[in-house]
Image 1 (tube, one colour):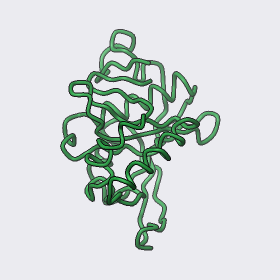
Image 2: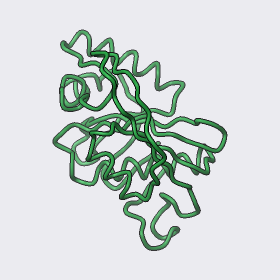
Image 3: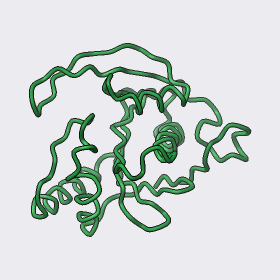
Length: 190
């Protein structure tokens, strides 16, 4: 499983339902720019965790666990779009962990996983146009803007503009600092 300086990306287990419910699934701020619905009670959270575990069994998707306290603070994933192109499947962190560099660590871990495990040569990220924080993170990591597309948000039917970015994955991308040379922001382990 991908691991960074502060985080572990790992498969969920049934006991993770409570952290995911309290820290992510029940928080409007977490789903504001995403395409999923809030979970409003504990029974639904347990059911959602069971579905999450089944999904993660066949997909490159993980919960995000903080190393220091063991708390589950979000989720993420990556998928092959074609044999050479990987795409992030969302990065969601609870608000207490925003602006602390964790989004950067997760994105770098996803790119490293895409290159070393999926053998991708290109990485694609999407974000809602109004999600300034995600767009700044993507741009800071050296992605190039490709364009936008309008989609419908299933929650209210309103149009949402998704902007798309890409980056070529080259040797050293997301690898250990001693292997990659200067510029690696964190150590990624598998």
